[in-house]
Amino acid sequence: MTDSTQLHGPYSAIFTPFDANGDVNFQMLASIADYQIDNGIQGFFACGSTGEGLLLSEDERNEVVKQLIGHVKGRAKVIAHVGHPSSDVAARMARKAAEVGADWIASVAPIYHGTTFEGAKRHYTKIAGATDLPFMIYSLGGVIDSNRDTAFFDIPLVCGLKYTGANFYSVQQLARKLGRPVTLMSGFDEQFVAGQSFGFNGGIGTTFNFAPQFYSRIYRLYHEGNIAKAAEVQAEINQVTDLMVQYENWSYRKAIMRYIGFDCGACRAPYAPMTESEYESFGEQLDAINVLKRNQGSEAVSAKGKASIPR
Image (cartoon, rainbow, N blue to C red; front, side, top):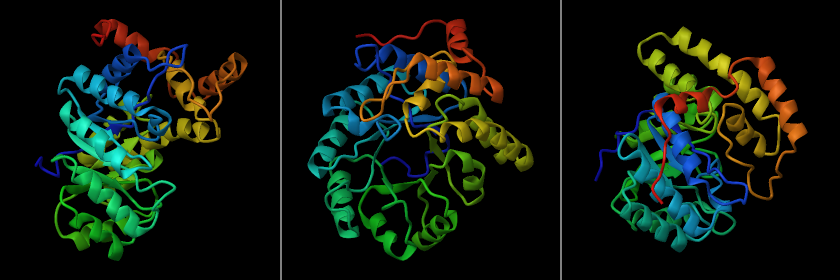
């Protein structure tokens, strides 16, 4: 089994880009992956919430993982999120991810059915048993109960946790009770610095897609001991996060990618596509913040040469 402490630094919860027909845009997937790697992203969390995994078909999810792994060719690690309401389907996707070379698998807790602790334990046991890859679980309902949740780590190959919450103390308690190294990844981008101070290995975030240079710099500064400067960079990029979370429609999140030069399309229904007037108004708000620059991403990728995935 791979060393459970291997994951460190910022991991992008990579968007799944769509073309004008609503199909997965693998060319764009290659471009945004290259941009993020060039700016310090250490790996990708594919087909999670940000990647609209539950809005993709099983075949689409398998193909996104396969093409991403084939494109990055070991330059970054790939965590395949296989979460699904059905434990059997999740296990099947885990096996597919292992076949194409994923580094880790991950899953949310059960959705809709079996959402109890015992249900989650059965769900995670089924998925973990499908491969010999290290497995990253989510906190159950966004809450950590350090007395209860140590039992998840008795499941063979469960050796990581993605925690999207603000109670870092509860995660610290869990890690102390486990008494062995596990990979801890935070999910609140706006608290990346704080997560480091509580012993998280890194983070997995949405905003890492369009601001990878900020989070790689935060991570470097923090571990060089320049915590004050890391916090300053965090505060700067949090201005974009503050704007982003004002909008219920996640298509606005993808619109920030368009702003920096990568048109990833809209999110799938039930989210709505943005009108051009909505995009222009949103772009003006980003201009006013003046943290990200229009087309900075596409210009950087063009300078290095066009990315491509053989089809």
